[in-house]
Image (cartoon, rainbow, N blue to C red; front, side, top):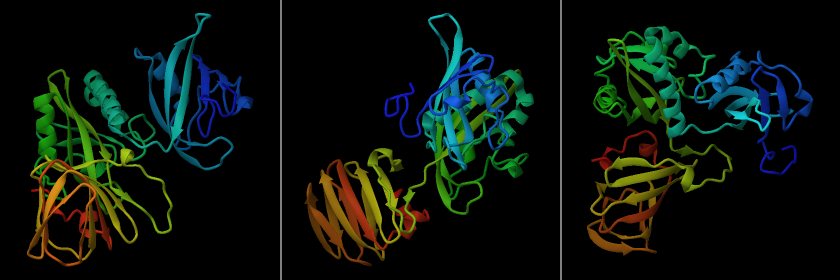
Length: 359
């Protein structure tokens, strides 16, 4: 496990092993750190990660995630690191903690479900006594852009780790940036289904731009009290900065569901917008116009394009070029996959002013 370039030690990946008393038995990248007791280890934010690792190992599950600000080996500046640790029984019969981590990992649905399920278990056990732990920025429920909230069934925000100013307010009738009653929807979904994913548009804490947010909520019972515990995942489209070179993959860009039969993935550049469209038979973009020149490229399926009073049917391999400011409409004749390129970039998409696609 010390062999560089192996599956155990490559790039920023290394493994570590601790005794359950907190002694660092093995460190794949920095062996000079071995032999020390690291029970009281903290990250740059003061989060007590040593004790938190040991608590995870001592839990009934014996495994779990922990997120902290930690520098790469031999580096000065910290980055978000997501570590997974597991209690392991060695052939000798002794138990140890084994772990590894990833720097700047992107939050995903399983990660959000994990943090909500752990928070829900704590609230089910302790009720309101758990709230201070959920608010604690040095605790296990606050990391990256993720925080836990707790609502009453009536819509009162009881805990909000990211925006504490909302606590005490009834948000049930609040609408998101596109008019959706998001709080009512996720409370009703949790009460009816026990747990659910909902999506809406909300501001990311500390920023002014709208963000597409998926939120996971779970109904929790503590005695006679019912709570809604949740956390969210911000799924902004990829926006490239000026001069930035990035390697991207459609496999890692979130699909935004516009309707039941229309989804898209979007990359915003400095001068243009590139989108992948997954279009069900019968889905349509009603007549509209924009200042961008459009290149509509069909990869599979077929569509009818009405443009400037004329109609054309395009199939796999066809490219339809639509000039700026020309009214046009598109209807899928089959299940269709297409690439759409616009220049200049679609500011209406970036700012969420694209209701014509969502009806």
